Image (tube, rainbow, N blue to C red; front, side, top):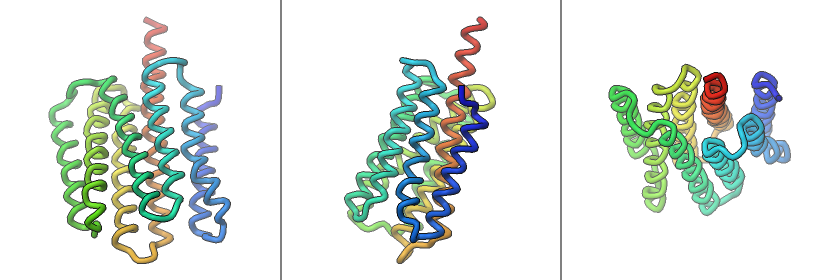
Length: 230
């Protein structure tokens, strides 16, 4: 079985190559190949490491698949590709939410719930205060922001209710929020974009997906070990 340490080296090599392709814009082929490799590798590794047929496996697998679709769509030009990519990521977050709720269907910490709600609400406030959203984008972007905020709230409950490695999950979703906020700033506030900002966005995003998957994987494998030794 492929070890997490070995996969991590491979994954962050893909991420480094993608960041290099952003820094060198003429490396278009490398850019188009390296970006899908991130989520494709996470998806394959997750399926490889988990038991067949479990509901947990398929919710996370669905989230990674929709994320891969979103990454691919966002490489296209034009608003239609942006909206389609955002829709795919909304489905990814909903898949993550279903997994977290299934594993922890009630608040494990009211303080954690309050913190999650505060951060989610502040994120929406920041989105509507500091991002210059065009009028046609206000509703779809805010709907996406609400789904992402809900993902953070339930992921925080999940992290507080499980073993220590599960804390990677809400940290990953928080990085996702930061990445998407900067992506919105780059798209709607900046003219022509910024190479270094784009690299930061992708570094945050790559780290976010990695932490979410590793946190959920640790939890699933921990439960499987407990069931075998019970």
